[in-house]
Amino acid sequence: MKMEQDNDLPDKPIKIKNNRPLLVVIILLLLVIIWLLIKPPVPLLPKPPLHHHEPKIERPHQQRVITGTVIRYKNNPHLDINALELKTEKAGLITVDFRPHTAARVTKIGTLGGLVTVTYGLNPSDEVVGYQLTAIKNNRTGISQILDDLPPPPDVPNHQTEKFKLKEPVLITDHYGGVVALKKNDLLFHFKPGLVDDIAPLIKKSDTFYLVAVRRQDDQGFININHDKVYIVLSITIDNKTFLVR
Image (cartoon, rainbow, N blue to C red; front, side, top):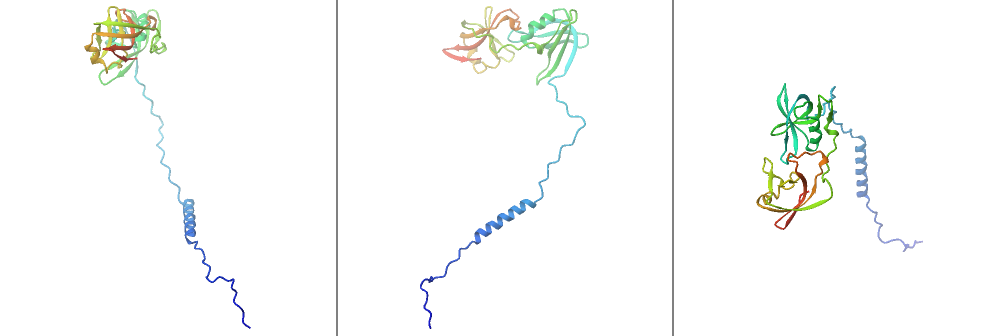
């Protein structure tokens, strides 16, 4: 008896899906993981050799102490006292600088002709070796002052502005030719260093200026050699052009 063919069976063979690329990827991933687990550790950089004495941080200047007689006081280009000249037995005549806002205290302790002991630091630069005063003591009275204990002056002395028109004022410059101030009678109009360098040629060739400025109070420690009324310039107008300089 013949068996009848089942018509439900497929006429074509079933294709088996090729998973070989997936297996290759899995094997590669496993190899990478195994390599990461068994690879030797990266050696650490060698530590620097230990020193018994750690290098000291250099101070900005070396401190020295000397005794001498106050011969005179000197001033900066802004006409503010900022240095004293001492006559000493060991070093002869020396000049020691100090910050201008400490002048009132320094001159009160170091009277002209008086014997003082000063502490100062060496501040070498590319041009000169300067001495910077850090403390002063009057040997007769015993009164002393550490200059760092004095408060710094405010950037702008006060907020009460005044307006001025200057006609042909005296132009004050430093030894480099930079403009530092304008002077008219007993009024001195002070420019902050470096803030008028760009317009210095314009200032030098002009003769009329309109200024907005604030008065520097006399109790801030500065001493002007001419006892002028000092103003800090906030803006200057030349030929209808206004420049902020503070």
